[in-house]
Image: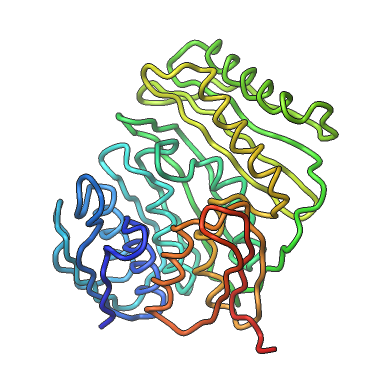
Length: 348
């Protein structure tokens, strides 16, 4: 039984999600306590319970402590099974975080699995659907995981109601990843979108983002194409998503609208995030590393990459992974600053 103190590191829900995925994949039961202890509302929230129950159904696990507000959970998986699944957060809980919980489990299944997830697709404190589709999924494919995602409807905070579809096939093996240099940025692509709001808001978001970028990069050499979207959604909401394409990597940046938040502020946020990444010269944005290290830890060969910022999420996830299986890693750089990561580094 793996024992996990959920208050370690950044102390959020990521520790639980990583534990659930690796527990199913490696058939190792765990007990986690102090779940989300440092948060304003500690314990399991509906979004986390959806992840727990998704992992439970996929692995036919025995579970104790799976109730709202619970600070302790016992999870004992059995065999992971493929099939067709539907999971509903019941709120605007992030569908992408639930998805990232169960992918590690499903790569051990014997057949292709189809999953439909309902909830928030573009909500705070989680990867947007477009980031998953544009950055995370292509990286998984490079690692050997066959995965396809599509979106049926969009879900914003607080109503949710968005729906995505995912198809996952188990890989023959996990391949290493070596992206030490970004290379030249040759294109910026993206979307500025509204749901049940005037399209002019999306246009203002886009204009503000472009102006923010051009205020620093005076004569950009890259091509730019940011589309305006009027999306199907249950409630109202806006977002802007920007994807940077370079010689050796892609990076994504999402900013969300909110009641009382000016459209210009949304666009400026996305532009500022890109500019920070651009100035770092790193291959990956600061969100991707903690999302991919669980997979890289499973590969025997060495992986290496650079990132625009070493985050506490990354350091916490590396710690959590090490509770479930042996692997080696080294991190060069301070938290909050650009750096590089090596996974399963070969002895010198």
